[in-house]
Image 1 (cartoon, one colour):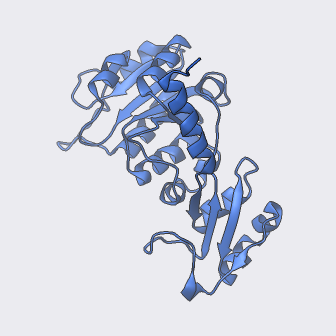
Image 2 (cartoon, rainbow, N blue to C red):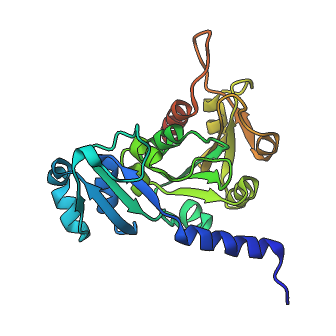
Image 3 (spheres, rainbow, N blue to C red):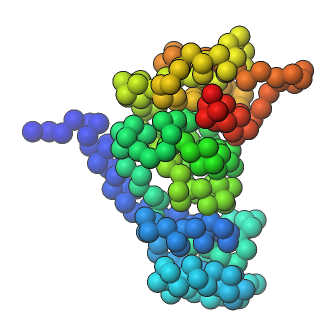
Length: 258
């Protein structure tokens, strides 16, 4: 029997992902990755100075580092990257399914969904805030989102190793699955009247999913329609706008303190 096209595509994507590697860089990102037993580590390039600072983590990982001259740092990362003399080749983390992590996982019944947020610095900052406030996961579509990269890991300052970052095939399907599990989906939109506090109050004690769009385009129409309620973060000034990472931090704080 011929397999459906979607099954073939899914299997092909899994094979590609199994071969994919990323380069993490910077002392914080590399140290946390070395100490993460979930992370498959392949190659470590360091300067003597960086190795001295990472000695305990390197020993714990069991890796054999390649010590290089700082003037000839050979890791294949962007020339302008602030690597601090440390770069680690590794495989992306596999956090499992949405049901395992967001529905029955550890932490508060609180998740963040990112609709086409492609800037790795914004996503890294969202991961950091999600970890601070105990969210179960940050969820984004597999396409048109920020992949797991060195720049994202460095901005996340270690949170990438501990905070689940799930990239799903279809964001609307993931939202529907969360709804079925009892989550209230609150979409952030600065143009609506309902304040975030009122939306959170309406959610009562139910799990909450905060849905955020990219700066400029905001939430796509399909994403807006799938949300249970749209809400805004009240602003006192005339400018009245936060970037997505700042909005996520404010919203997460509001959700955990409601």
